[in-house]
Amino acid sequence: MTTAKITVVGVREFQRALKDMDAGLPKMLRIVHNEAGGLIVDYARPRIPSRSGRARGSLKLRSSQREGRVAIGGNRAAWVPWLDFGGEGRRKGRPPARPFLTSGRYVYRALEVKRQQVTDIMAAGYAGLARDAGLDVS
Picture (tube, rainbow, N blue to C red):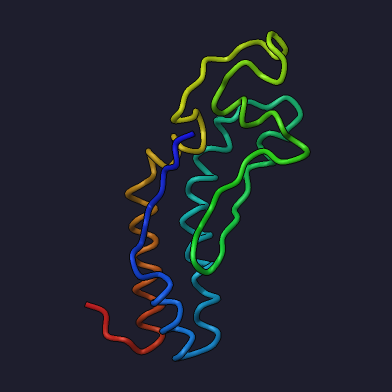
């Protein structure tokens, strides 16, 4: 499975510095990560095939102060990774074979398409938090 990431160097240090200035500021990092991840979810959700809506409904944001994540599948929609990446399914022939794509069809594709916008949102959010903390951002 391909792990597509946008890595920001120094997030942990930035979080600590914000905490030293104001205990409430690090909590705002999660909001920045959710905003960036929301672009991925908004792009991928309508592209996921739906019969009952559980596959689309399983696409969720799982952000923390240090990282933003998008999760898909889960107990109620355990087949969604097969839907996204393909393969033979649980048993050969059931569900029918679906061509395997290491890059996925929905979530990683959304990151590929929206990468620049996600990066811009995160940069603007981090800069805004730094300004709110009283730091000079140039």
